Length: 114
Length: 113
Image 1 (cartoon, rainbow over the protein chains, first blue to last red):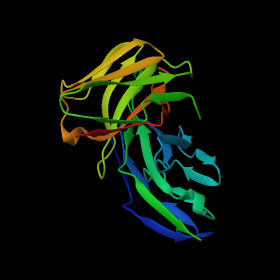
Image 2: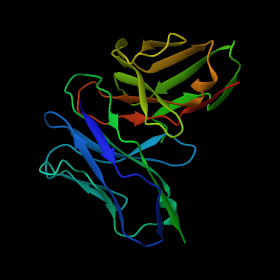
Image 3: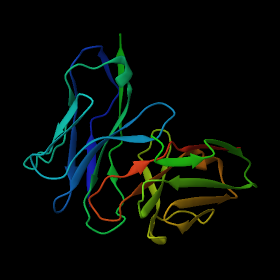
């Protein structure tokens, strides 16, 4: 079945460091791919998305490129801030049917210190 | 972000109580979802509604009973819960097509005592 695997955390970085959170997926067909972020005590917020191969999603300095050949959608940011500390979820939607639920990875906790 | 609201934000209930969680979306979507988020476990899909019709029940125990009176409102009725049901319950909505993103509410933190 369809699945998402993302790197285990926690990831601990100093402010202004480069961030990579790896995400790979298994899906039939051509899924849409997403990154969500969850700040403490809050729900999930859509961070960025990509809907076809070689698309690059970007938002708030974060980027991820849809790589079909490696079935990957790694999240990157060039210079992290303390305010980026949160849990990051990679997700996919692989079915065309209406009301299809997303499939999520287990989440990666990012902790950024000043 | 106030597109999807959930009430209450926090709920403590005994195992014999009956309570309801409410979700409302203001995004004009036609699909709504309940997810359960427990500590150290992946996000679990519970129910899916599309145009008010339930399209997916992910083997959820009958002590959880969803209700979707219209495309903007979704309820989760709770009764005779167990302590292991303590979790963050997240509501989401989306357009009714596939391959699309979902928008989440802030969640209800439920504690069963």
